[in-house]
Length: 430
Image 1 (cartoon, one colour):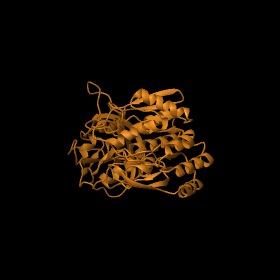
Image 2: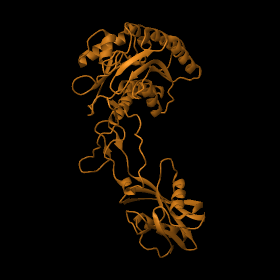
Image 3: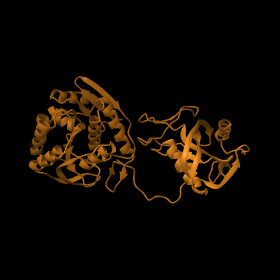
Image 4: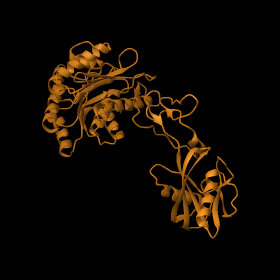
């Protein structure tokens, strides 16, 4: 459950919370505490929701439960602080509670009434599993200036002393490279990072708290949840959207019209950028080993590629296809192709056979598993012997022609693994 302000720009507040939860596989329930007029650059004005309406919204969500975690953001008024603290204490105790003490916007605009910080310290801070202030918010809640890493440690400890379970103090506004501090009791853990070029992105603080709530709801240990949240936030910064007044986080891939046709050869090219954070991938000196991301530590595992091939035979004849695409365009091969996400090998084989030859599998048995180095890269190949099928053979998809060949006199095929599989089939039939 998320309690906070509604951002019509779509990048911060409850919108960011729900997007983040959805990305993590959770259903986010938004409880509106304030309506705002804002864009990608700043908050222009806001109006708080009455505390009773906040309570009624939250009660409706709780009664429809279960609730796995709670995160509060912009509350706006002392009345809303009181309302949420009562609900958390009386009906939501024992689950992770992330307190994002939103007191002012990134552009500097105030987002709360006078006196609210004292009430947050008194009523919400002691209930929080983790509090996630930025430098300015930490200064207000701790009562001390925060301009350096040593200041951050003192401020975090001051909030721990006020009863907070843990503090994740976000150091993105520190000079130099950014670093976040996690304080748990007397233990201090620093998470160092690097700045991503492009400017400030509106909504990263909300996203951090929502990601942390999601990971804790999923049962991850706190330090692991913090690291994973930082990685996710880095990815949404890398994929940010440029608007007129500023940048919005890219919680999801940008939609676009589908381009006509397609380039099948691009499938075999290694990626240039990290799928998690968008940074350029690197490889060990010498060009061997997996591609790795120097920013978030992600490893791109590509090989071996899982593929399936079909040995369709009848009365001493074996069905071959003539390749219509590169590599090995124009050469003969066994029908088959690469497995798609979510497919079993047999499902892949049935799909590929139907697409390339128009035949539907009735009976197929696993003959062997092969591996090979090809223009695609390393391949792990599941080979199925197809002995019963239906339909009339018609070339399609990646096949320009079909050819029934005498199984004892097969010409050289496009891929070496296919040649070896034909020999294994002959041995099996003998």
